[in-house]
Picture (cartoon, rainbow over the protein chains, first blue to last red):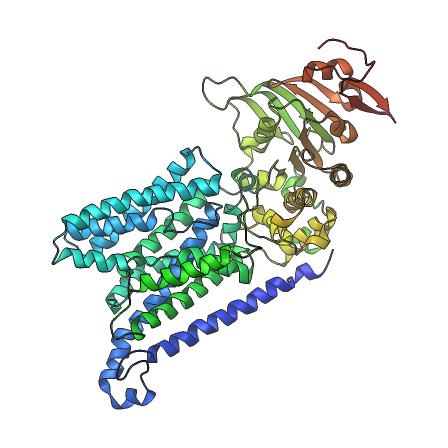
Length: 340
Length: 290
């Protein structure tokens, strides 16, 4: 018996160190982000403004801080949910955007805005409900598609379900009141954090925090859930039940985030990939890694979104742009391949 | 569990509760087990009765579709029999909790897919799941056990390699190591040699022999009579969901039974005291008419 396994392999030790680095980076970026912005001048709020300008202090505490924390929560949630989807469906090519969750949530939110009065709670509930329905429909359809392997089938099913939902959303947009409802829907679909206030953040956290905590605590078991049913069963895992629990947690957290922040694309697909690459595939480290990387990614994008131009750039556009570019770069790397 | 692990005992750590299991009873016993995949379908197992001696290697031998894998899944508890009973060490399988039986029985499935780039060591560590609570992470004892499993299968040098990148033979050994980390008394292997070349078949069979020497009970399915003949103490001959013959390898594997099982003429000759099956249509081989 070797003694080294009693401690840890170098990869595991390195991954731990990298997690600490990531954590420090998130905290550091949080601090820096507080001073990024377009008040009083473009890009930077000097420290002295905090003492001299009461408006600057109020702005930082009441507008920037909740928004920055929201970006962290959004990034953590979408990345964790993406990692969970990829592991549970044994498919590195899925995230909530590919499984009908985002499209379902969009439809639900639009429906709530057009037909149900558009109260925040209604939007949140509708987004969660239809997101869940989208996931279920994609999964069931993927089981029934008779073309390709599991990786492809699930992606195809997700595309089909998302397209159905998108057409539904388009119908809703078409019928929406162009002055009151349509702007709401459009801005929601573009995704962004400009409207986030402390109460919004609290509402999101109320759902997302316990879900993320649960996923974090179950992180090692995600490895087991990524095994086939017979293997998981032979290891004493109640795979069906445990998969359902982690999926529900992932969808609920995503829907809570999405209902406030709108569609923030590509985070859930790309960040878990980078986390696995950098920290290894063991979800014990890859999941917290994905959470921290996701926080960094969304926070950095949101800083650009609110600082770069005098007008706001919708966050969803930025994350999609950067995420898709990264995805293409990773897909073209020789060592990257989908293993079935 | 902790007591046995921290003392760095050999791989055959007899679990405290496992020690209460009957030593005289067969490790696995099936009585009149019938299983169907769906109502109205023909039975995949049709009144199967069999016993597996503790500490032996038993080969379940038969053509494709004869019910071998189904039998393994019923033994595991994955497929509940429609009729009949499965007993583990004298106790009905249903009387063991899922957790208990996963400490007793390990499975090496036919095509284990590992989607993500887990290292061999991380993969072996998954075998510790039956000993961990829902929110528990594997600790030093578990890591030591996974490492012993790698040592026992001779792949300690591969510990840091990625499982999906392994060759077929190495991956099969990694899967055995993962099942061994469960410290099971019974190891079920589904077609462990079917996709391997000669050297890797020999390597796997060598590992299985050493596990038997540790006192483990091994049940493997195979459609290759020579693999069964090379390693098994006992053979269970299956066809069409039924057991055609069962008993010591030398007495069960004769030309007539195997010809009837596979539906083609085969000839069994004895080489160094073990049966060797010739299935090719050799020139001058007597055609006994299938």
